Length: 152
Image 1 (cartoon, rainbow, N blue to C red):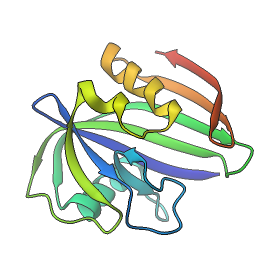
Image 2: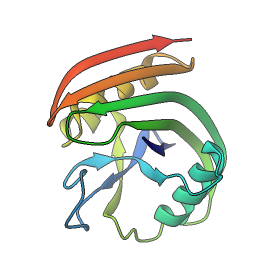
Image 3: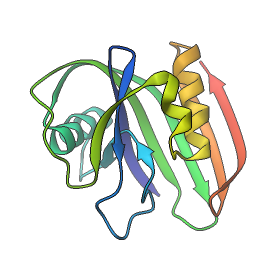
């Protein structure tokens, strides 16, 4: 089981997106995702979030919200529990990222990008509810075969 965080930083009705193009071996190769990554020993979700955002963007989050828990199940990859956050305030300047290119993308354009099919489900939830949610996404290869959400 893998524990991760993912954050969508918001500004001017845009999300800061990471186009994963720099690593040769990467399950997210050529995909557009938020910023985040795996937990280090004894980290809380918030500690992981803040560290990963700082490492990948150079930004220090000052206002963020824990929005949901996404469970990824696959016949090819280890099960992942992703703690999903959004952020609306930060300090610092965006730097370069060794995992890809950071781009502000209008929220209305997100679904036109090369994103995982399951990501569309949590983008829909982010857009339609302020309540905490859980989302179960099951993949067979790259194909999404199950999508089940619970809103609390």
